[in-house]
Length: 404
Image 1 (tube, helix red, strand yellow):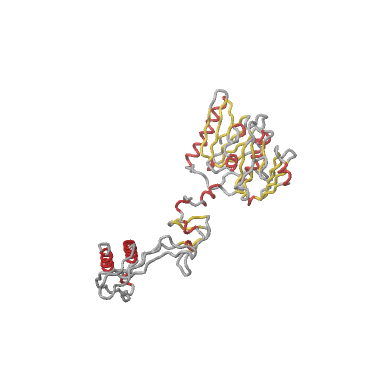
Image 2 (tube, rainbow, N blue to C red):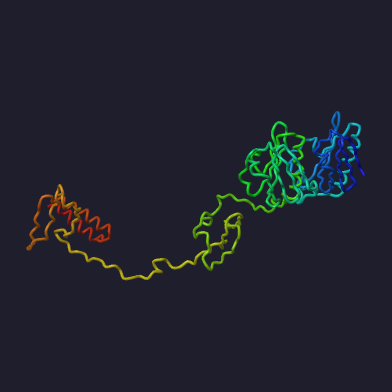
């Protein structure tokens, strides 16, 4: 058994457990004396080192990540004098400190213990019930519920809400920041309701604002550790979290409220709850959707012009015999209001050929009539009323009228 006794405390190692007992000297911080004795199993130890200095040395014990609820709750923010895994060693006891550190390292080497983060807490937190009085109020924890009684110096918003009672089942995490003397600290209990919107600690009814005595406000870490030890281990939350994917890869058709993200009745999709399948990846946190099977190629059928039944061909106009006069076509005259008359009345159309083959009677504006008929012929040809042959023949007759 290796043991070192100092004014700062006592460390004893029996081959399987490191027992840390705080000293009773007035130089020992109140937090360590209140926390009491700590029993550290060897499987929770990651390493140990002795750091010699000119006046006195330090013996430090390093634990595996996730093994201690105290380190998890405080996040390494404890001041060095209040750190229970640090022992101040006098210079004349440096050899004993080296021996204790060597014994712990030898046991770690022989047992071949893993150094990876743990999946559960290997150390027990402080015993409950525990109650601490701070500058902003009194917080107590009985193992299942947290009660906060506000002080007279608390913000009036907090005092107006009355005592705050929080169940452990409603907690997500505990946040703690020590009062350094230069900046205020806080102890916040993050619930599912207040997870998104966080108020300042001085106005948050779920937080204690630590602004008073540094020595006494440091005791709030006891409550934070006791609550953290009874919350789910952080490794459980990391294992349960799915791999997050960027929203850019999400199919907008499946997330919309339309029929694009639903299977038809009688489809072969697999029901998925609290998730959506996008590009073969199941995502959590969305509404219920049905996973679609991969799209299959449709069988190739006959061409469209062959698949559809051929009906009778559309009737075609018979070609007109060439004539010296253009056919009579209806003219398009825009309607005019009854109270107004057009500034330029339309020229009369050419009459049908007179008997005996005499040429039609010509009036003023003959060229305008021929131009208008050319435009009408072009429109009829574009609309498919006249065939190419009919259009060419009729156009030649109209153009011949300009030479007469």
